[in-house]
Length: 378
Image 1 (cartoon, rainbow, N blue to C red):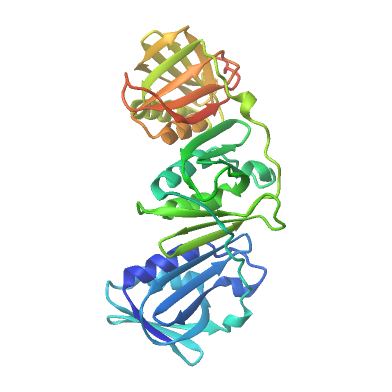
Image 2: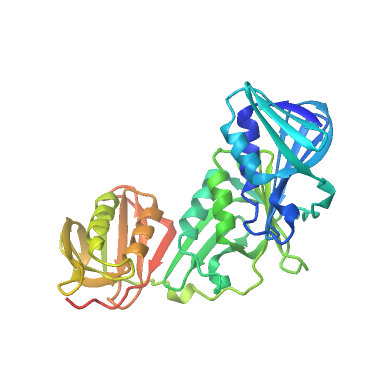
């Protein structure tokens, strides 16, 4: 096996597949990345039994072959090589990687010991990669990090014809985003529950403006798989085998007041005021005409933090409390210069939506619903 390839192409492909490398694999072979060379094409693959990644790229191939090498080491090396053509060559039981004056020798393992990876299901539709990536990152922030609550660690995907709705919740907040795509079949209706961290890894790697193809097995299939393909790279993931809770009833539709606030100053104020509290201690927000007062902490604790901001308030004044970390994550997720926060009462969920300008129209395809906490004692 021998091929020559551009350093950036190699590093990009290795970085993609290395995201599927397990931390503590049951099968030692899963520590590795499979390199398969065939007719001027190089195929890389890795798996952690929950998901598998593949990447293909063109190269100047002198000799075909297949080998298994340490995935983490190959990733570190390929990123660190000088920006020069890279030669990868099998020499006996070792792989030689050279670029300029840099040279590395890696031990190999028999590639035949590597488990067979699942095949990507039938294509379901395509969507602009930047649109999909933004929607995933906006929603996944609300997914739970607690693995004991498996269904809450996922992103619920609902497909109905040309619309995809992504939803995530950890029971304390809920994020929902609706985007358009091109379905491959008319009258298409599917649901899937996918690991949020898997989708986030894929979204963060979608740096081009090309379309990403999405592949989902039907709800009646024995093995539930999802696949994503873009520009020679693919990711296949097993779906979470769990039902998703009914969430529509927790989304308020009527409000007594709404506040329009510039996001950046509000984020800065929340960060500063929350310095005197633990991340889980509530932040008190008092909304009055033209003014928001933030307060956190207590006289018998670490101290008290206070700050005020100019806002636009329509409706009744309200005092409400939020987890400051959850509030900041919601403000970051809306992705616009201004945010509209809509309220009913101090004990019911508030809804955050993005606004491009203070007097602009809200972008209503994304909503971040945040449950309040009990108002802290002063």
